[in-house]
Length: 430
Image 1 (cartoon, rainbow, N blue to C red):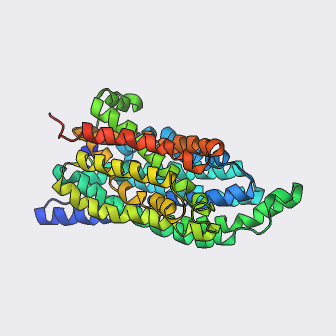
Image 2 (image 1 turned 180 degrees about the horizontal axis):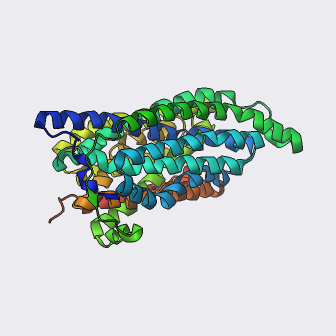
Image 3 (image 1 turned 60 degrees about the vertical axis):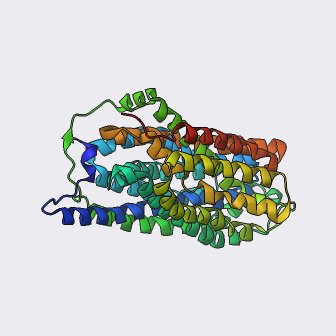
């Protein structure tokens, strides 16, 4: 049995229009919780990267495999997740995603016990597979729960809850994980002593993700109780790869490319912030204090999304997107060519302008998809694999040129986003 995703916005009861609006509003609250959860957990990668880099004595290129393993899930799982939504519906698919995330969190236990970097990568991949499924559900669903005209504004507002998670989680994670950075240099150990050291030091990571596993099970239980909140009409099943023919639409294809580049650029910057701020030429901070600065980056995105939700009601979304991309390019240039406070805070300020990019690119690219919205969401979530590629390229560049010069990689990404904003500045003609 497949389900027509266009019906996902229909509340179970239509006795009164007022009741229908109330039901849709209640459902939006649950979707906001999903945005908060997967945003916060994703941002914890920025905290565990410096931890694992120190424990496993990795280069920047090697430790960026954390992001590669995590975001590779979007490439592999997005289209199957979209097919799952069509088969069992939005709410049930969200529950499947949450339980998969729980399994990923629990896999940190054997990863720590064996003290192997590769096992951490496997745990992150499984965790991200669940997040991918939840995101394939959440993006089109929140867009459907209201008028088409305000879809960009509504998704931007939902992304603000995503940013609330990315603001809170890194701060707490820095206290729990980076606050216990070992005073022993892993390079001085070998054999059984090194394995024991890594196992002990990664316990703080395990405890953090165990707590998340408990919370995810609770959220999944609540979502399961709400599984009949939507009326989803049966529809004819379609081939899983059919979604990719949407790339024949120039606007959609350009938008999918920009999702690839935006996620890659945002993740690359977030991944290097801690090490960037630790440099003597920037702020020279210890690891845990540098980690506590991550909320300024992600918190800027949260603040910007509330502001952006308002701006997008007043100005063409494409123009707002182009201006935001231009501001990021300026900030990257300033940070790479300055020192001290200016260099550090220019990089942190980028979060404010990142704020509206994902939801705006998503809605501009998806404009006019109609009943194929879930398929489009699946393809766009495949493009999130940019978070696996761009950080790896940035890390490799940092090993060769240094962190500052490596900022040219995300700068190129934002130049392309600027071009898309200008390209899509006018509504799509039917």
